[in-house]
Length: 239
Image 1: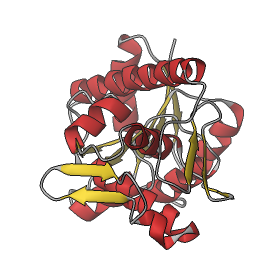
Image 2: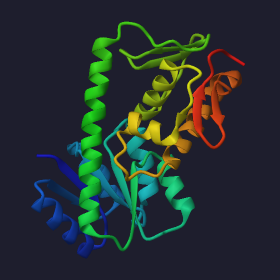
Image 3: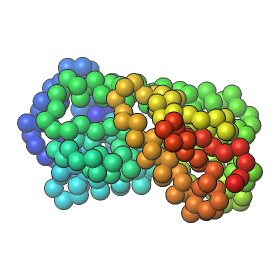
Image 4: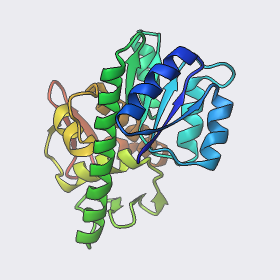
């Protein structure tokens, strides 16, 4: 049985979401604050988090930042009453996988939970297959080395610290240097996209990858190239 942790301070929302998810076979935990959620995460590892942005004390954005800083990579859906694009972008940049704007349908939310968990299971399986099947790093421009089995990236002798999906995105582009991938194609192949995520998720991850590359070698950031109106590619060689 998969477990969902709801981090929400409105009891009516918690009750409605809990009832729907339990009816569909999920185990449900609940926390009414960011502090309570961090305590729960110290004791259990849920399969997915539902996080309200407007929490008392540690808000949803800060909670998400701390979750990812701990290296926890379970899917996260943020719940927000804010419909502004900037709030959605901030959530995605901090590592959220999806967002739902209040008021929302609990039936749709449950569908998003199922889709994200299927996708997470598929990505984990694919990672295991790739690690087992590939004995060599994918081809990449000079200076950039990718080890898929150990999930390590180096630029020269410097290690590049990446989040799981950042690594998957870079490794996919590196396996096909020079090839342009649309945002939709990247969503399908890296996230297992099933129609729920915004294509701007890819833009956020590309921007983050460029920043991490530039922090080690500014020239390396130029390897990630934008084909305007189409998508992204990794250059076949350093500019």
